[in-house]
Image (cartoon, rainbow, N blue to C red):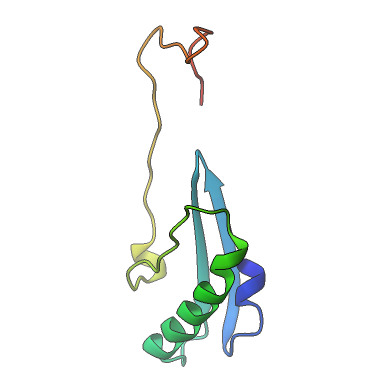
Length: 93
């Protein structure tokens, strides 16, 4: 997705993070960029890149956010003594 975003006007940077089957791509635009125009351009690139993604994935735009509203944390935990489907030791993340 970062490659698909390349060349969008006023794009300052794009970064991504993937963990535990979840992926997020963040596009940062210059301050004078119209938010709704930028979202339209990103959505067009998203739709055109969708065919290059693994089948069954449904990428979507997140809500409009500022750098201050973008901070969040999550954890993935297992129950004590959890085993996988082959009855092997518990998962550790």
